[in-house]
Length: 276
Image (cartoon, rainbow, N blue to C red; front, side, top):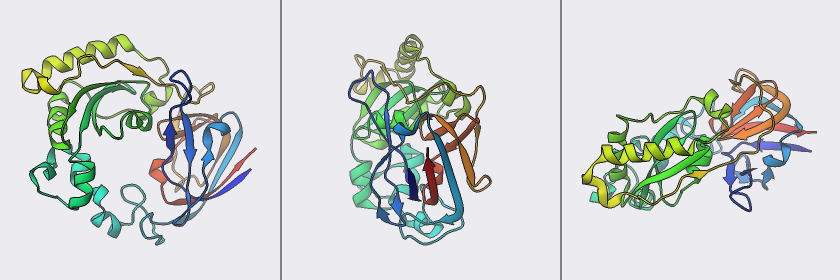
């Protein structure tokens, strides 16, 4: 089969049961017109080639651009886009719960003035993060976590961000992509111990938001035998990526050659994909 279009972030869904591997889908677009879903999980174990001919188009305007900002935006669109507001990266800066919008009141009310999780996840190591409760476990899927647990549920993003800032004294908030891709064995016991350490560090000031009975959840990804080493590649420098697709983890597609491409960082890139 062949597929041609502009890439979008992979959509990741839980299988029929928690024991099943996650399912990966690409909707993509013809410039701005949505295309039918393609199930990338079904491509694992098959030969896949991805060809990029240099065309990148802004996901907001369709304008052809040399590079993208944020998730597939032109620089001009990124300056105005609600989803590029600074409180996306630094949740503690949000002020919409006080009635103060940093960029777009309607968007921030809908996305930031709502309950948020403070969580721990196991990616390359144990890390702390914040996500909207409506996003839930999809955040873990996107980051390639093999285990995760909710620490606290805050009523708005800023409060969740304040807790995250405190927990950064104890836990990392970034992942090493190589270790994340190659990690396959959840360490539930270590995550449970980290939960207790996190609660102790937060102290009684945040006790009313703590989720003491929340279990540790584990995730399985559609992966076969992985190469011993992986290297992140970009279509700008390597316009043809091909080989047997051996796994999908987080937003990465991993090949038997060791090449790993982060699909999210290529949103808006127009590619031709052949699957044999």
